[in-house]
Amino acid sequence: MRFRRVAIHNFRNISSADTFVDAKDIILTGENGQGKTNFLEAIYTLSYGSSFRTAHLKEAVRNGAEGFSISAEFENEYGEIERINTSFADNRRRITIDGKEISDRKELIYHFPCIAFIHDDIGFIKGEPEVRRKFFDQMMSLHSPVFFDSLRSYRAVLMQRNAAIRNGRTDLMHLYDQRMAMHGIEIMKERALAVYEFNRIFPSLFSRISGSDIDLDIRYQPSWNGLSSEDEIIDYLESTEERDMKMMTTTSGIHRDRFSVMSQSGPFSSIGSTGQIRLCSILFRISEAKYFTEKTGKKPILLIDDVLLELDDRKRALLLSELDGYSQAFFTFLPRESYFGEKRSSIVYSVSNGEFSNADRG
Image 1: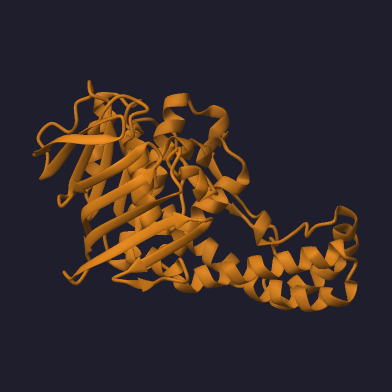
Image 2: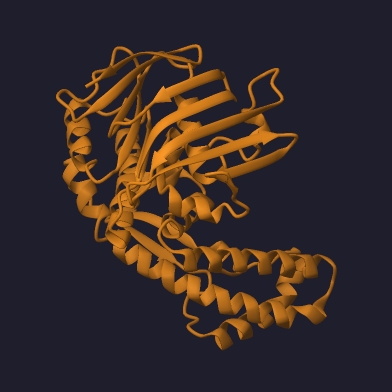
């Protein structure tokens, strides 16, 4: 799968851009604040129907405009040419593929498997547990519609159970406990398997690129640790109902699971240098891409936003050598940065004030 042409109107600081992108590597170069990241955000919005920078798409509308539109021509995995359009106006998002409106964003994920490398990824190591949960859930959802549906169903039941707690509806609790247990136990099993498979990729990758003797692995710590059946989970939820009522929320469940990055000396966030932690966060994304390809046999689209800037030349070269299993990648660089040396077929755009110029094929 590859984007061939992308047209953006009134998105962030991009008033109008129609860019040819039919190459494996698209390089956007320019000073900070000129629109490089905005272009990547637009590609992400096409792929997910949402942004990696804001939960509110109205914030992405160009100042003074009433809405934005992003459209693209792309070649699907069968070599067929399709067209996608995502627009936002009057507080409504509309997504179409070849003119057919998409009502469920879930359909997009499997059309455009997209992985974004951004500065906030450092939260995988230093951030709150929710950040790592979100990472693994997205990684798993990217290849498994069944997991995606289970997660959706669990979240819906959790919202209903929490509403029942706030309203004192104890008569509904047993029904919600049953549903939480049913969906939760499947999610626990899938998360445990995913961490096992991730640990077959990530630790050796970190050792190879970092050149350090630090041994890393991911530890999965379920909130319902030790509970292995629906009945056991239901009994546990019933036993903690009084605590939940006092706290006014559901205090256990897969929404409180933890994923930890551990070294032989303890949590990596406590012992890793700033450079090692940054590298580790980038390798999370590379491992995600490798995991996706192993599970599906397909190659994702990568959006790589300035995260290579802090790496020395050796680590950058080693890291780029691991970035081989993708269908297309969009990179951002500052003007003074070197790109890749000799590289595959690429297109280079210079970005200034939301405009894209000086296209050059590599």
